[in-house]
Length: 158
Image (cartoon, rainbow, N blue to C red):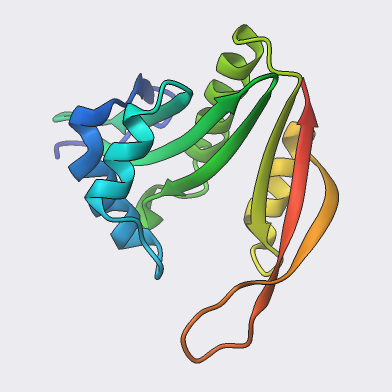
């Protein structure tokens, strides 16, 4: 990569089944309990799938992703991740905003997600966008060597 990255020029691109291997690899790099390529492929092939990649730089590199789905008049963010070296530059926000726009165009009325209670950066991002807590899933996240952790259930009225 040449020169400094300009985070004002992030491209948000639709992700389809042809991006499954790349998304699975990125998911593995970011999450302890990652999704394999087959799981990502199945999601991306689903007719209600909404997924995007964030790319930047020259040559283009993938900095993050968001994967979600539509069902009837609701949408859900299933996974969001930004490479550590690109965090805190607005990429996550751009990805969530792309999901919000797409869900609105599909006439969804609410957008849901779950986030670990111990992830204040993500919780703050979602709250700035307008998400509000609607419940908790006790002990939802189970990680090796750690106590089970609650998931905050958040929703955004569209």
